[in-house]
Image (cartoon, rainbow over all chains, first blue to last red; front, side, top):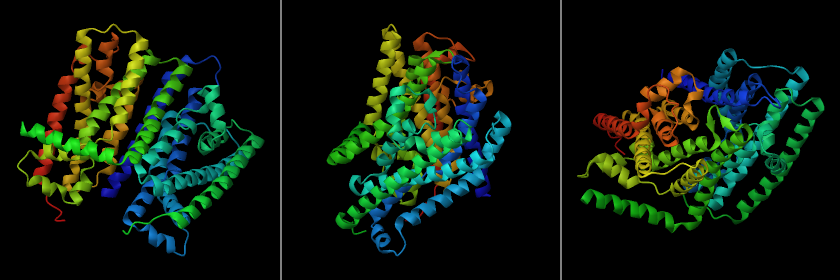
Length: 248
Length: 265
């Protein structure tokens, strides 16, 4: 019974969030007819897909690391025969999956009926979108995992994740799409991985990127993941060699 | 008198503790600046591109937003521990509070008062100053007094809402999703002028969960606007609504405390 009410409340929470976003875009877009990149119908699609993507890629790695470090459990994780990273990724992914299935998808279907969602692309682009979503999740997991490892030095998870959250908020283009950003900010964003975590995959879904464009986005994501993998290995080695572990 | 002394003693400890770890304080400040500054930055990006939200201009919306952040920060300084009550119920802190000869909520708040919001005050006051400067509003003695009273009222509303979302922990109900909707999702609505929402939503935000009184109504008076959906008298009511909300939240706390059974830890 408890869980059933929790289930409905999560759906209501999701709908409220989507409603606020849609209201704000409906208020903004009519005054913006000069170069119409998007209509309000497309903005609704953007809001819903971006919400799903954000829920699918959220993590609690920084907090998990802080608990592990402060309680000393990390020492056990370090000697386990299975990789800590793999374990944390799998755990987070399964948690996100249940949230997506039981709260976000129902809410997305309801909002699709209420406000209308536009499906414009064919099957090949849809498959590429699926692939780029998987890569976007991997990318976000890697970034947050590396930020989580920084807790070994900052000793504070709340604000490490807040700082990262601020960067993601500004540069991922998941709340305000990057079309509306001033040029100089978009140029800064081009050198950062954050846009590949939300804005670019959503562009594939909305049909704003053709096949070759979509493949280019996926290649960019793959490159960043390789780079972050190397960085993660380096930080990890530093931790294994030089970090002092509290007695727990 | 003793009560006030007690408050300052605890607050001093809280701030001094923070200063003991300067590196950690800097990380915190940096995190806060990025996350709250990020919110402002997004709003500024939106407004530079579109010019206005409905009939509200860029600096009017920024003023609205900064008043909300300031009230949140002041309210949360005192009431955030109550919102996180369930952790303290579990570790038995409430039993400790109940055995002392001081008002239970007062002692609890004093003991847990947070020194972590200094960066928030600075950011929101800064944005508020920038907006007021650019809006070129004539400042009178009345408007300053009224602004201060409204901010106190708005902070009380935020505090009351935080208390109300924490108190169910006394029944050991895990009400995470409910408090999430009641506070975190619902206060998102007042990030923007509420006249962009449907009439029913405006009604709820005014008469049922009166978050619109935190910023939407009082700011109107300051801007000399009259966008009030129900009655222009609402622009004057924030301090009163704040006191009423806080009183109700306090009664709810007492009610919860009566039902409380120790976890025995």
